[in-house]
Image 1: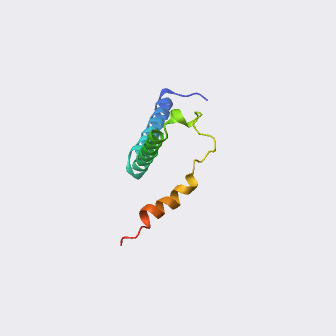
Image 2: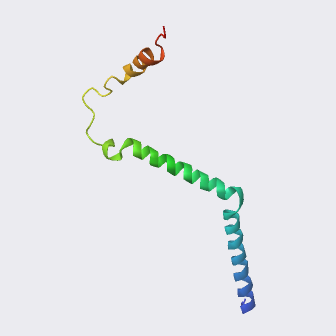
Image 3: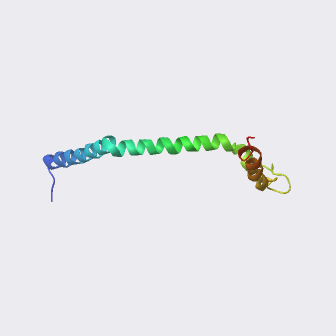
Length: 88
């Protein structure tokens, strides 16, 4: 089976049409904005998390012996001292 120049041009035109259709679907409508907003939100949360956690300190030997340093006492003390104080 031989292919002529016209057949190749027709096949190339179909491939180009398919690519244009795919690009149009990706750039238009809700799909584009949904992807864009997802990337923006996940990226922003990742940057905020990394700025808060200080990645250089995560694996350092910076936890004193005993581990939690009284973290289980903080919440009840905060409630007692700040939220449940009597106003009289």
